[in-house]
Image (cartoon, rainbow, N blue to C red):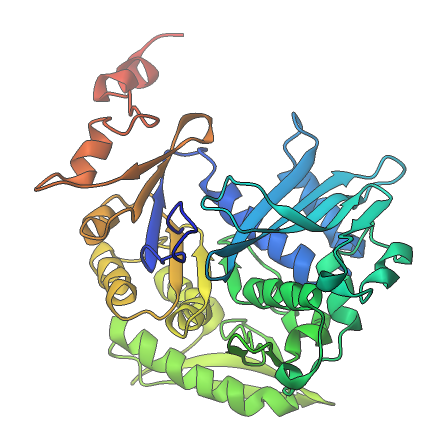
Length: 414
């Protein structure tokens, strides 16, 4: 999602990237991996939760037997930060544990250059850089910490004194590296079309995630990931006004696609320190609860909170973004983020027409093909990415299927 060089600073190539590919190529797995990585870093109890093991069992590649992530962020000019995590199934129970984790910095010219390891956990062994200028002993408590089920990043963050005045506090250089890493991960979101856990979103929030952080390299406001589409959202009373503001934005958004909508009314039921909130879509002659709206409107409502974050500057990964959305509307939406979006939108899609919207922005079109290989389309002149894709000119996506291949399927004999 960036240039392949470090020297001179990493330049953001573009703010929209479309990932295409045939069924089963691994597009959803890519978005799921981002979601899993984010959970591992931000939620210190993620691997200990009852539902996590069942979810990971369904995602696990049985030929490998583990999950492995390696993420690279820009830290400073000419310096990148690399974070790697490996999780495996626990041999003694049905759960999973972190078998390896590494945080390192590179001052080289390319992403594949040498890295200086700051912290490395390998099974039960933990090593911290012996360069005293990095941590100054501030991370020694990690040597005795339980890190099998909690990321080093989460553990360090739980020990740091955080507030809106964090920029004025004294942190070691190593702590600031981890603060920067944590801030980057907090700014990443992943939408999976089959994700069904949003109604109880606020019941399992990690208070640390709500903490405003300012580490001197840019302020990161308090995270307010209110999923405005939950049919029965549980909203803490202090956040109700913020929820109502987001609902007003959602209302304006849906009216673009369905002008006859008059209002989205919030039906609130008070319950102690929270509200249970349902959405009523009001039209001139009738009202519709969200649950009974059309599949297209439901998809737009579900996507809205993620697209809103992206418009404001977040990095958002969306799986099957075009599901049940009219192609013309979808193209205009992508065009908006290309031209006006402050963040980065990375989406998967089967709708190849989206390629035409992206073709004038170099390296925005990626095809995930055979053996998980990526092809990046770089257009020249009047070349058409759609035609190249359908004609099999993407090296790892040969599209070796013809109409007559179905003859024997439907008309052949057993």
